[in-house]
Image 1: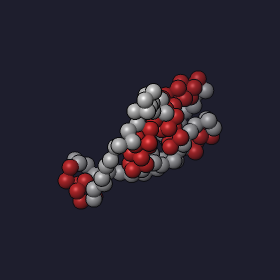
Image 2: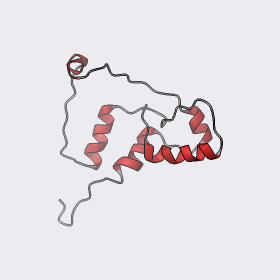
Image 3: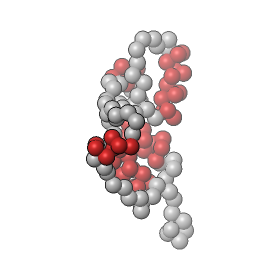
Image 4: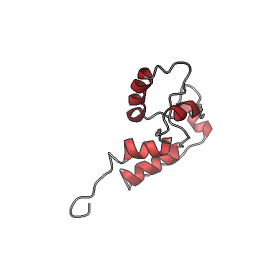
Length: 108
């Protein structure tokens, strides 16, 4: 799971106003992989960007703690705020679209 703060922080204010209490998974619904994020980066920011993946064994050599990939259930938050975007849509709207590399007049 992943949280786009530009989208969710305003919801925290609204949650306080509505007196929302209890346990909430404060995250955008859905999942996105590292490769999907890198593909978005290449599509919106740098078309020449290239990367290569490495194995779990190689990863274990360079990180201090093991990775945990999981999806938190955001149903409660989505029910309270139906306008809440999926993680992929939120990334596009709040991260990649605003930072999209614009072509200059000469096409560069």
